[in-house]
Image (cartoon, rainbow, N blue to C red; front, side, top):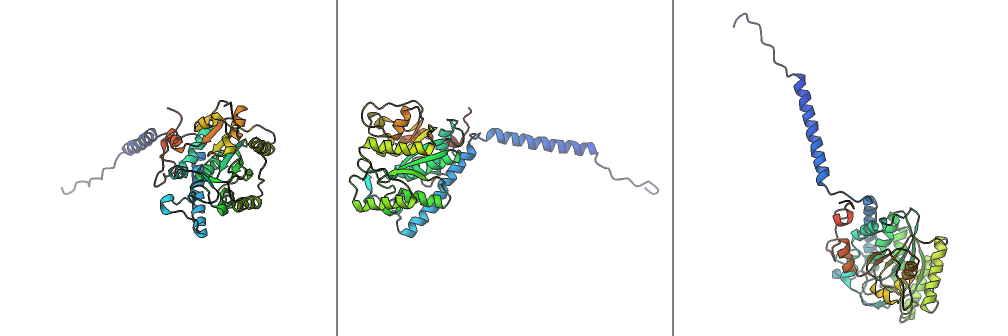
Length: 341
């Protein structure tokens, strides 16, 4: 209409904009809260678990190319996950039978995380010594145990038996000491080996070809690792425990981990054959036979973490048995989930 004043555009009240902003913030907060409630809670030692698992992955990234360069790779079906932790079936330092599926199962990075979970329940102070008894039989289990102890800020005192069952560290020129030295040199593991035995019958090389024993002694000499070769077996255990005592400054270790079935670990006690995998907190007596390092320390009240009978251990820890491909660390709630209900 002529002469009418022009209409001014209507403006949205500031109060409406403020309410929209508040509603958006409230909606975002509710969404984040819902995500947190729906996400499974993680274990308090999740970071240490993940660090140990990643050490296992790093070990595979070192070992596979090294074995390939040396022409030591096993048949593809023996190590389908390309971990480099599986050796030949039979060599001069193969001393017993072995299940390849169990060997492969110990290469799962989540095993290291699961061992962190078990050890963390002991509430050991950082810097506490933990004796780790290994052999050439379960390479993955060895790496997992040492990585778990290191991830928790504990101090491994490693005692090694150098022969192996089938599919373990069975290459005389690339035995467990060579593997451990390579991983230490590449920064995957930090711990030295405190002392070793040759393995085989009596733990002193019985039944092993002299040339292969020379190869094991040469590896120990290069690594600066003393080999205990006394007899009988009880004297071998005494000698190894003397090295443990020197390494710990006479202090009782916070735990002992026994990986595999080497004589120096559990010994020949009747009870050693009945020792269950996993963590044992109560002392285990030896009523007959010769107790190994783990049995001797158990009698003193030291908790024992036994890594053997891998099918049963995997079930108890919520780990898949012989997985292909290997799981991605951090995703298994049975391992990484909270202790809280």
